[in-house]
Length: 400
Image (cartoon, rainbow, N blue to C red; front, side, top):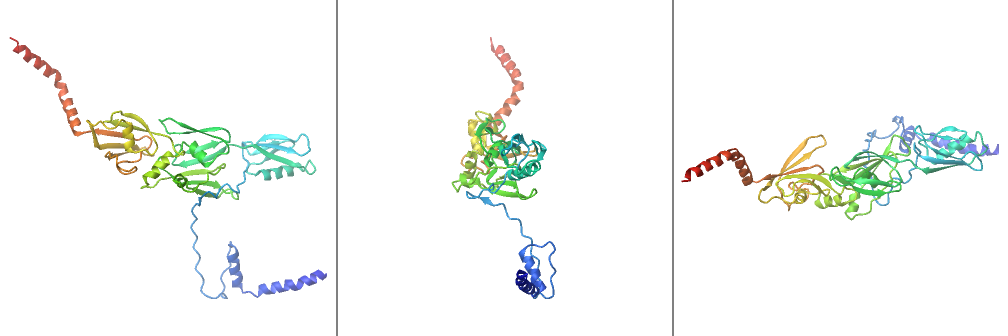
């Protein structure tokens, strides 16, 4: 009773101080503290004009992560089908089991049969199993370990050689860096897969890849619908800048490599083509008036001049350096034809020395004199037997 008497004046004082505030001040305080699902209406007691509603802020761009940032920091591994677990109960015989999470997200344990664990962390699954065993055991102490995680399933899209869906395991694995029609370079790795491993598994980047904008979209740990997006600048590291982290990838991640914009400096293109994220070579076809026509292998981000040199250079007597045709197939199946002029001094990526792509066809035309002789030969060729017979008749008539 004495304690209640001491608390009563304090409570009365607190209530009095609250009721002394105007209704507008209470409403304003609630709006500042946290967003309200049903905001309180403005009252006539509030002084001044009614403020205009604040505009909805634009979503913040994906942050660029440097050497001190890790998107995996704070991420909790969640169980899924394919994970192998080891469970035991302290000092209780007959309850130990090595199990694998089945396709329906459950595991089979002694006495419990099917236990749903998909989407739970190890700690959550351990608490659930402990709660279920409490029906049969007194204060059970459950141990749960992950002995073999499932393969990481990720999606790789954008400027990579083979975009699509990939399953990458922790075990010893090989990835082929290369394009169709050229020799494949094999990259061997092991351990938990990283973002670079996923790009290499997709065949490496294309010649139009922008390594300064590689994004990783990951499902937020607090929500099954929201995704956090991180952006990495590997190009700055290749150009001698600060180190960029190579984060571990998680199940369900989506990796996208952006496309280069126009007007990229030639040194950036050369450095990108030399990186271990790119294929060693691409296949281009060079035909026409060159010394060694045919299918050629050139380095990624090679120029028109590089391809012509790989074909043994132009035939100096027959080739027209001002009339070179570049044929390129687009993603929609159409073919773009461009007329170029061979200019070895032109910088890489310029109009007359473009960056080649896998599957390009280069046609070197004949010069005017060679074309004239070719047409003349084709026109006179059908008359060849008649001219020979007339010459022989004239020779016979001249014999005495």
